Structure formats: C-alpha cells, structure tokens
Length: 121
Image: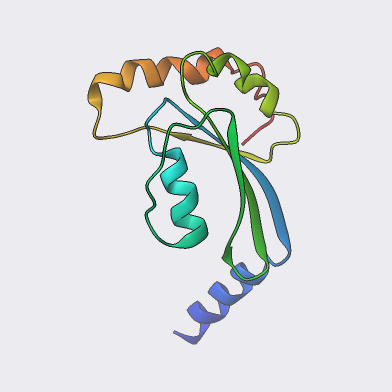
C-alpha cells in the first residue's frame, strides 16, 4: 500500500508547474461551455450559444493550470476553427452522447481540420 501511494505521489508531482493551452471544439449545443464552467466554478450554469469563443483558466489540481479555449460550434463558425490550433497543447472534441442524430456530423468535423491540428495531442 505504501508503495502504491508513493508511486501515485511521484506521478502527481511530475505534473507540478504544468501549464497547457487546451482547445475545446464540438458541434453547437454539445456542452462545451457547460463543461468549461463546471471545471472553473464547480457548478452547472445556464449558457447561451457561444458566438466566437470563451477562454478560462482552470486548475484541476494545485500547480497544474489549463487555459481552455471554448470555440463556438455553429456551422458558420467551424470554418474558423483552424485558426485556433496555433500553440495548442491539446484538443478536446466534445460530442453530445444524448443526441445520436448528430453523431455522423460530429464524426466528419475533426477530419475537416486534420491538417491544421498536426502535432496537437
């Protein structure tokens, strides 16, 4: 048990001082803004469709900081997604699992921006 706790502690300490820029994309009404504010405020807030983007810095554990860019998912805005990939350390693509009618549309979107996100985990 002591070895397990020691290993877990060493793993978590390896992330100390980590700062990352995370891009959050997904179709409109997928829940991106709800997720970002749940992470930031630890509560569910009423949202309106995002026109443009929201940027919030969240600290899931002490000394680990993520700047999350929540970019609007309306059809007309998706063409602009490729401009947000610069200096991005990670990508989260949000899919609303309660809306299976849009799964195919969601599946097609990442392939549209695949060239722009080369090298982004």
